[in-house]
Image (cartoon, each protein chain N blue to C red):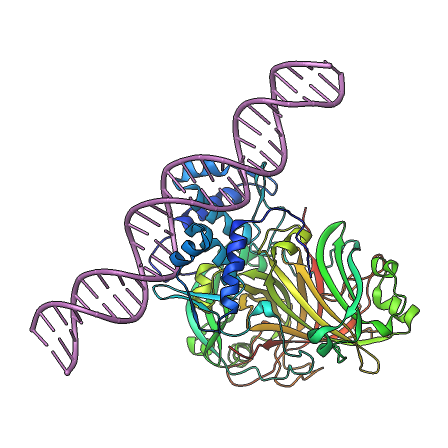
Amino acid sequence: MDADSSGTVLKRERARDAVLELIESRRPGDAIPSERALCATLGVSRPTLRAAIDELVAVGLLVREHGRGMFVAPAKITQELVSADLALTLPQAAGAWSSRLLEFTTLQAGARVGRKLRMSPAAEIVYVARLRLVDGAPMAIEHLHIRAELVPGLSAQELEHGDLYEHLRERHDVHVHEAVQAIEPTVVTRAEARLLDVPELSPALLFERLTSDTTGCPVEYVHSLYRGDRYRIVSRLALGPAAAVEPVEGGHHPGIPPGDFAQGDPITSSTRGDIQSGD
Amino acid sequence: MDADSSGTVLKRERARDAVLELIESRRPGDAIPSERALCATLGVSRPTLRAAIDELVAVGLLVREHGRGMFVAPAKITQELVSADLALTLPQAAGAWSSRLLEFTTLQAGARVGRKLRMSPAAEIVYVARLRLVDGAPMAIEHLHIRAELVPGLSAQELEHGDLYEHLRERHDVHVHEAVQAIEPTVVTRAEARLLDVPELSPALLFERLTSDTTGCPVEYVHSLYRGDRYRIVSRLALGPAAAVEPVEGGHHPGIPPGDFAQGDPITSSTRGDIQSGD
DNA sequence: GGATGAAGGTGGCATAGACCAATGGGGCCG
DNA sequence: CGGCCCCATTGGTCTATGCCACCTTCATCC
């Protein structure tokens, strides 16, 4: 499928591929031989074997459990890709979302957040950290920074149940209108990994969003981290020279670069977050 | 910002933090002491020291150069996040895209690709691997799988210059109509890292796209890998109870989970790929 | 019979040491 | 003087080994 331009064949790569075959001959949840056993059969040292395994864990094909063993990761993961036909199978439900409050305080905005919300660094904001779960399993960590003056008396109750934007509208007369959101890939830190229940350095999606109300005034700055092995963004794009709903000048659709010189082609999209079904 | 609930202090964490201080006392491009020297001063073994360094390389704070040494990484990286105001500064141009052909052959579809393109595994496809560059710098690796029967005489020329979809339309009478695309975060493998000129295990975005023509017949299956440190997806979302352009049932917008019980809220989006300025 | 605890297996962390491979400079030879 | 080669240095890979923490199991004891 791909060519390796270097002639060297790392020992740990051979080991990795060998273990990969073991994985493919098994089903999700099945155990694979222990590290020490694999060392013997593959003829490599344990550190080397572990380095090979690390790669498989990093891409989510294998999970380690201290004191128990190593198991084929549940369901399909990032690297093996959506093996099911992704077209039209996507409507599978998103599951039940819930929240667990991690932190909820009022503090000064500080330089970075203050700049984003266009307010004084000394002005107060409500800082909320919450864990978002789907069917009880951790899915994302959200860090909310909301202008404190807009939401006096904001309760923990509102942050743990229901739609926040709806609460803002109903109880606080704050009408969110639009948002600018940036998405980039990243890897989780040790602390984040613990919260999300994934291995350290696992791939994740980082969302950064600035939400404004109908007057264009920034309301909240959100910084979220989504598990990469369970969360996926699915879009349905209408291509062709026809549709031209939003000619964002100089833009192109993610994943579809423009021609070498010209710009623009695709248009109209329907994008949504999708939870990967998995065990 | 976060608390470490575990009492253990890994040796490699102490080492990492120590090296981190060294980095912060220097400027981008400066060299730091050699591995062996650091082992001595920090009192750890080389594997341990290397494991610590690995983390710093993974988040892009340090770069290694074989035979030369280790250097403080140039400028901002993923982890530092978009420190520039993301709102409304995004129109910065995308730069000049170009392509470098890595592979261009005709082969049998195989099970996986055949299923996606709804064709026999033995039927032939054109397989193209190309490196996409922006202003000469590697940005993405694309793997195209196109039904061979649709594009007889497809030339390397067409794959290296201009917009492929336009070529398909003009020269091959293939009219792409819509596509379903999935995006997930991942990390780059060794070989991919070399091509993209980033450290191994760096964050990246994986795009998987199935493109169909006006008759609904699958045309191509694309599998692309975008650098995470230079590529970012920026969306402008219209929120509020108003707009309801596409009520994808059970869907929610990426990064904005629905309420705990109810579903649906945001709508209408404008999404684009964005190249991060700077090196 | 059910709780308890020791034993053995498993992954997690760390060590010391060896050799390989790429780099760059300094010395040797033409 | 100039080009070439050798070598010290640095990162890259791998081995062999030890100890620790965690989990499961099973025999034991109450």
